[in-house]
Structure formats: structure tokens, C-alpha cells
Image 1 (cartoon, helix red, strand yellow):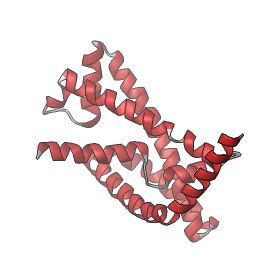
Image 2 (image 1 turned 90 degrees about the vertical axis):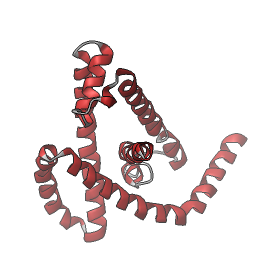
Image 3 (image 1 turned 180 degrees about the vertical axis):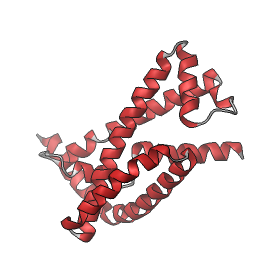
Length: 190
């Protein structure tokens, strides 16, 4: 049962970290200026690989240092403890602090951009102003709320995005396959 719980949480956090299948990356990539969408798609494959490296490093650090077995630690405190113990100094805590600050900042920006575009699409451009105010007001709430509540809300949000987007992906998959085949055939012949 513990293994199943660990697998479930790992899957949820992996989705959160990579945004795989949620539709967030295509919304952000749509604003990029590129000559070919296939090249753009290939470039986006680097992000999950980087996330896999970071998550694997974190997981192994938690295991090797025994931080996972500290009953009074959870979430950020557990990771901070693991890196402090693993590096043998406070440098580990500073590395975790900088990484989390960058992750939090970029996540706030990316989710804001995607939500704003979705609201503009659904309700029109004029409706995005109220969203910006509400979003800014909710940032401190997210920072001060209980970790369990924040993760629960994030998991629900990501699940809803994932289900909605997977329906669209299934419907458009033949176009993606066709465009990719055309691209790779033309690059081979060139």
C-alpha cells in the first residue's frame, strides 16, 4: 500500500513539474516565433528530460540521506534537510531555496499566462483584467496556505486540464503524425 501511495504521489508531482499532457506547454509555445512547429516541438522535449534529472537527483538524495524516514519532515523541509545532510553544509539549503524560488516564480508566470489566454478565448479580451487582479491577490494565499491544501488544489487543477487536453490530443493526433512525417521526409531528402 505504501508503494502504491508513493507511486501515485510521484506521478502527480511528475505531472505538476513537467505539465505533460495538460496543454500548458502548447499555449506557451504558441507565442514563440519559429519557422517550423516540428522543430519547436522537438525543442520542448528537453524540458521533461531536465525535470526527470532534477526529480531523480532529489529522490536519490532523499533515499541516500534517509530524509524520507524523518517523521517530522515533509515537502520542502524534507528536501532541504536531505540536501543539507547530503552536501554536509548549509549550501544544500541555499541551493534548494534558490531552486524553489525560481520554480515558484516561473510557475506563477506560466500559469498566469495560460489562464489569461484561456479566459480571453472563452470570455473575450476585456474579461482578463479582473482575472489579473484576482490572480495577484491569490498569490499570497497560496504562499501562506497549508501545503496539503495547495497540493490538493494543484492536483485537481492539473487533472482537469489533463482530461480536457487529452480529449483534444486524441482528436488531433492524425494531424500531428502527418505533419511530422512530412517534415522528416523533407529533411532526409535535403
